[in-house]
Length: 319
Image (cartoon, rainbow, N blue to C red; front, side, top):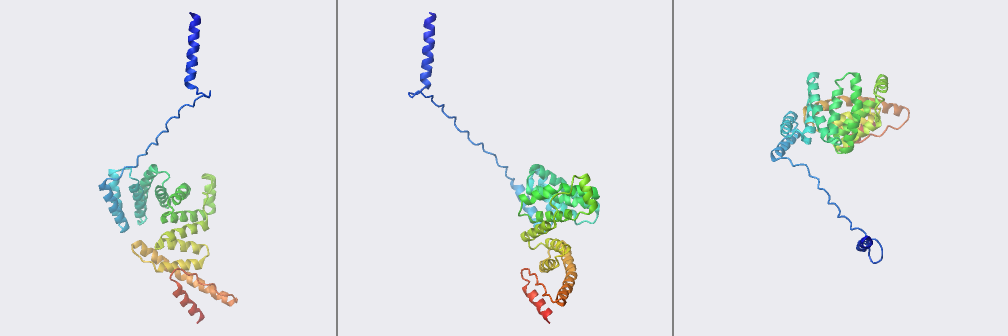
């Protein structure tokens, strides 16, 4: 009986092997498991129609330079949808923009702090977003103007990553390039005390502060928004500080032809007109010196549409 049981066990093993062995004697491959279907990622829910209407209204108000009204509409949207990314970063930018118009530091600080709160909320939603990082950098940069020296330097150090990420993720945003240029120029011109404090307390001067790169950033901003008077004024000042007087003159001449729409434009336009005559006088003196030394006068740097003006200047010099 025991022997018969062993024979039955051996036969059973042989039969089991035959079920998985082909005629060639090779092991049959197990059938492959069906490929897993890709899991569909749900798209963010679309805004309700009422919210879309408010977004359109806010954008229209902002484009009409009614910043306070636009900010109020974005705040209404955030009451309904506290995590609305577009409303958050736009509310942050508008808050800071409104705050810059006040001379009272208390009101400035209140609006800058409000803008920082909206920007931080947007950054929590999209840490790598170009808009959210720009909003944080803008709020930090303007808050720093109200800080004492140590806190101001710490703010400049903190905003570096935000301003670089903003231009990386939103290279089409001219305001981000302007802010990066301003930051770079400010860091490049730290005085000795600021550099020592940064090295001892903050672990070093933030990398990236360079005057040439700052001017390149502002040139990029002006390329993206050629009718922005503030970009022209900032760039002309940087050219002047770096001794590139004739380039500053060219930019200021271009600014003369730009339209002034808002009260801020009028102020910046006056600053440009006030800045131009001393540069023209200094350039004329330099050209006279070159003539006395027997050198040719440097050619006029032209900007679009400036050929007639340049020809007139050349004729007047010959006379």
